[in-house]
Image 1 (cartoon, rainbow, N blue to C red):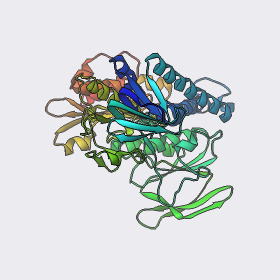
Image 2 (cartoon, helix red, strand yellow):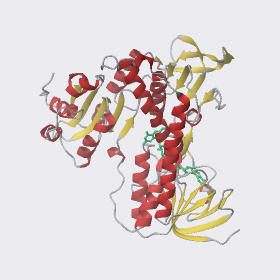
Image 3 (spheres, protein in one colour):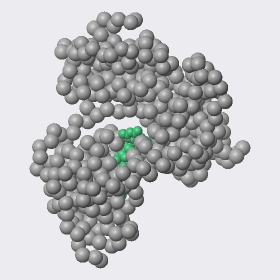
Image 4 (cartoon, rainbow, N blue to C red):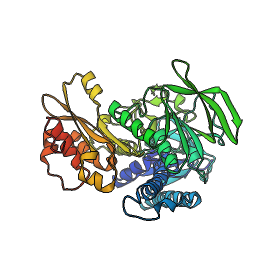
Amino acid sequence: MTDPQRFDLLILGGGMSYVGAIRAAQLGLRVGLVERDRLGGTCLNRGCIPSKALLETADLLHRVTEQGAELGLAGGADVALDYSALARRRDAVVEKHVKGVEFLMKKNGITVLRGNGELTGPTSLRISGGESGELEASATDLLLATGSAPKSLPGLEIDGERIITSDEALKLDTAPARVTIVGAGAIGVEWASLYRDFGAEVNLVEFLDRVVPLEDPDVSKELARVFKKRGINIFTASTIDPATIERADGGLHFAVKANAGDRVTEVTSDLILVAVGRKPLTEGIGLEKIPGLELERGYVKVDGFMRTGVPHLYAMGDIVPGFALAHVASHEAVVAVETIAGHHPEPVRMELMPRVTFCRPQIASVGVTEEEARAAGHEVKVGSFPFRALGKATIIGEIDGFAKLVADAQTGILLGAHLIGPHAGDILPEPTFALLVEGTAAEIAMSVHAHPTLPEVLVEAALAVDGAAIHV
Ligand SMILES: Cc1cc2nc3c(=O)[nH]c(=O)nc-3n(C[C@H](O)[C@H](O)[C@H](O)COP(=O)(O)OP(=O)(O)OC[C@H]3O[C@@H](n4cnc5c(N)ncnc54)[C@H](O)[C@@H]3O)c2cc1C
């Protein structure tokens, strides 16, 4: 054992917590960051960044090959995907950003301790099995940030070859010709969209009765409509029967069964990509040694300042309840370290967190759905506007989808925004800000939007809340 290391703040897990590490250093804390793998965690190495690098090419390919002729580009149909070049770019994009995080750690004087960390107490750790050797470290405060890993289902054990998760899919140097995706949540529909643009035969199997089941039902309906138009085979309220899986025709043969009734579809795919959610990584890190630490379905319980209830022990990111998203994790990291440093940040408010799913058409939402608002006791007014009626959408040739705003009927205060359509994620910051400042639909309509732009869809949807949309 080397000498114990003493810090103001120790962080276990170097994913999105790196943002909090930098903020803590800015506030004058001496920070030790423990990571057993590459810095940047899931988002940088196995999540947001590599998957969006692939989706960018998928989108370009679609625009050139399928829309090129209409847009006046000859020869687009002959453009072909070079997946090995794309894989090199995907890896280069990741590499650039991992190096960037490493640089920022050095620049801010943050000590990176390389190895597997395990709590020996609420604010102390044993680190082993990595470049930093065997050591004990302790601090005044400790932030747990160990993230999450993909889940699977009984009978669909991940073999890393034919039955895979997003972790393995992001390492492949080829695209499958036939793929079945299990789970139509955010990750599942992104892969379905991507592989379809790359020319694969895609089956999307969802246990619940609609795709993207956490989104507004109107959004689910529109996505299903467009995905079907794109040739994606959707099986909702269905599962793969694991007992039927057998190797055949160079791939896997199996039955997709409806939850009710006797509909059975025989399917052959090169790959089954399991995207049924993620589990928090809270086992094997010594949590059982911390009296008073509360877990709920494996997640560490925290308050709005990321305090666990055990003095000086904080938690953030995918191991705490709430949306498992990178920007949520980094926001939580900042709130945690500002609290630790004795500042008085606003608490994290999960209802203000924006969500974007990067399939085509893109999905973006913030706040509550119409149903959730009613269930919470609001009388609501709703306004929707289709992209099809917007000049900019016609110009770029992407007319599917709509914006839907949910407002309180009495006050007009915005309660939620639900978009599906071109660049929906880039339009979302405006309703996200409106929710923060308790803005009304009328104020969104009042704010003049430049023409022709996609955010004009919000003005029309806001006018539609009072039945006054112009271009319908
Ligand atoms: C395919 C995919 C696509 C995604 N796309 C998006 C997206 O577009 N937008 C978005 O907002 N979110 C996206 N996400 C979610 C996002 O990646 C996560 O919400 C985010 O990475 C969570 O950050 P975190 O810091 O909590 O955990 P992680 O990023 O998982 O980091 C945890 C870190 O802790 C380390 N660690 C764990 N245990 C130990 C230990 N005992 N000792 C030392 N180190 C340890 C791990 O190695 C890891 O580096 C995506 C996820 C996936 C899987």
